[in-house]
Amino acid sequence: MAHRWTTDLTRADLTPERVFLNRRQLMAGVAGMGLSGLAATAAGAAEEEALTPNSYEDVTSYCNFYEFGTGKGDPSQYAHKMTTSPWSVKIDGLVDNPGDYALEDILSEMTIEERIYRFRCVEAWSMVVPWNGFELADLLNLAGVQAAGKYVAFETLHRPSEMPGMAYRVLDWPYREGLRLDEAMHPLTLMATGLYGKPLPNQNGAPLRLVVPWKYGFKSIKSIVRITVTDQQPPTSWNMAGPREYGFYSNVNPNVNHPRWSQASERQLGGGLFAKRVPTLMFNGYEDEVAHMYEGMNLREFY
Ligand code: MTE
Image 1 (spheres, rainbow, N blue to C red):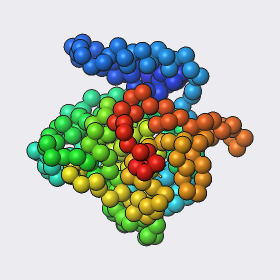
Image 2 (image 1 turned 90 degrees about the vertical axis):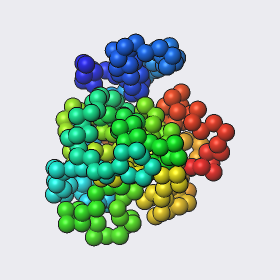
Image 3 (image 1 turned 180 degrees about the horizontal axis):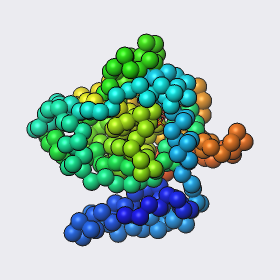
Image 4 (image 1 turned 135 degrees about the vertical axis):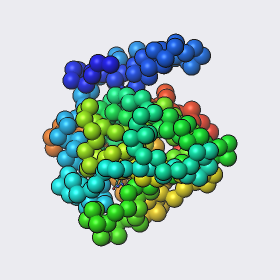
C-alpha cells in the first residue's frame, strides 16, 4: 500500500474510506456493506480544502501523558524511561477468551493499516496525525465479546518507578478510559502501534494506544495494559477528576461548550501563534460515519 501522507492531502484522506475500501475489496469483494455510500462520501469530501498532517516533530514533542508530567514537553523528555518490551495486554470481563495476550501474539493476528486522522484536543488545538494500527474490533473479535457485553474499559500501565508524573495525584491512577461497545467496534476506532510508519514513540503511548477520531483527545488512552468488556458504563479518569467538565462520551461537538471555554473553533498546531482559528466540525468531521450511533440521544446531557 502506498504511503500518501508525503503529498498534498484532502479531507478524503482523513477518513479511512480509501484504505477501508481497498482492504475490504481485496478481501474478496465483500458485498452488502454499504460500499457505494462510503465511496460517495469520499468523493464529496475530496472536493473540500486540502489539509496537511502535522510534522513528526510536532506530533512527538507536544504531548499529553500526565504519568510523565503535566507539561506538553514532559512526555518527550521523560517517557524514554518507560520499558515497553516485553508487553502484554490483559483482556478480561465478558469475553470468551480471557487472558494475558503477549503483544507480539496480538500483532501476528492483526492487519496493520495506515490511516490519517484529524485529532482534536479539548484545549482547542488540533493536529492531523498519520497513524499505523489495527482496528480495535479485530482484537475484540479475537477475545470473543459475549452477548452481555455493552462497554469496553481500558487501563494504562501503572508503573510509578518509570513514570515520574505519577508521584503527583493530578489524576486517580491508573489512567482509565471507556467506550460503548458499538463505538469500540466501529471501523474508525484504531489501536495505534505507530505513527508516520515508525513504531509509536513512548510519549505518544507506546506500544499500544487507542485512537477515536470523533472524540476529544483524552479518550485516546495510551500504553494500554488492560481491556475489560463489561455490562456497566466504566469510570474514566477525566470524568472522575472533573465530572462537570468531562463526560463519558466526549464527542467533539462545537455546540456544547466546555464549562470554561468554547468548543466552537480550534487552531491547528504547528501553524504558529497567529494561525487562524477554524470552526470545529461536528464529530470532528466524521459525522457521516458516526452520527447514527447517537441518534435520539440528547448530546448536551450525554456530553
Ligand atoms: N493517556 C494516558 N495514559 N495519560 C494521559 O495523560 N492524555 C490524553 C490522551 N491519552 C493521556 C492519555 C490526552 S488529554 C490527550 S489530548 C492525548 O492523549 C494526547 O495524545 P498525543 O500526546 O499523542 O497527541
